[in-house]
Image (cartoon, rainbow, N blue to C red; front, side, top):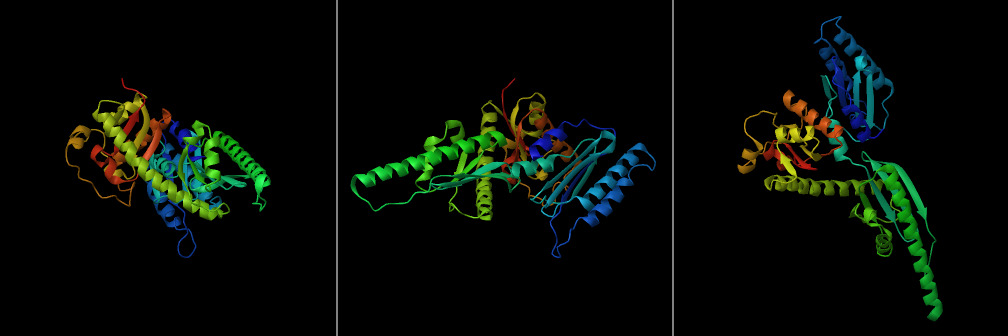
Length: 380
């Protein structure tokens, strides 16, 4: 199941009168090649269980969840997984597990009345799904990425051509044949890419091709597909999958950095003009409740976020010189409980109203606005 599907499913979970466990683990092996989360599990499970009265329904539900989680971690974690998220509430019939090849920032155990979704939303935003097309005039590979790894690959083979030393009309006729072969190959690549985009819900495409095939691909692409091409890579047509992964992740990181700033600027400019933008936790949450939000922008570290009702307003902050706090490597554990709950409420409301979520990694961009802003669908 994709991160997006998991987020939507978990956001639909109704608040429960019994403990809801949200566990995030960094499962990268240590220097000795061993897992490093078992000590955290033993300590935290025992400590959290003691906070409920022995024999109470809440304690019994929680203990069943913790036992099931421990058994899952013992037997089910794949060697390729560097991050694991588990959500459980036996009384609410919830047990959702997610394994990803990218690491989560830190171990984090949260027990409340709803799933703790902010870290999962951050993973979804940081590692979006996309496609990379690596091609020349007779071969092409279309690689589909999710959470930083290749999840699907399609090959397209064209007619292999070579140059001829003949001259005159023969050379011109042969060249026309070559051009036709190249155009046909480009058409087949685009048709295959379009099917992949539709099937996988791809919104971003990276393109790598030589000076011959790239213009032909552009000519064949319908407008709705061409607008999804966000960058061009410089790779050999037969580059290894590892090289494609490395180059594409670097390109997506650069793209996210640029687009984060553009989105925040767009939201702030629209807010200033009284248009389709809003800033600050209170106003953004209110817009989410009303279904106005098209895209939620939320800080990548919770130290930039103010709880709803905190002194000062987004207006005041926007008009004054901001004090930018340093990003904390210990987030979200170092955040205030009110802030953690606010972040979860924002993410949950966004998923429930089909709003896109973008986590802004640069701490300076949203700090003046309480760590939250949004682009709106409409104004009331």
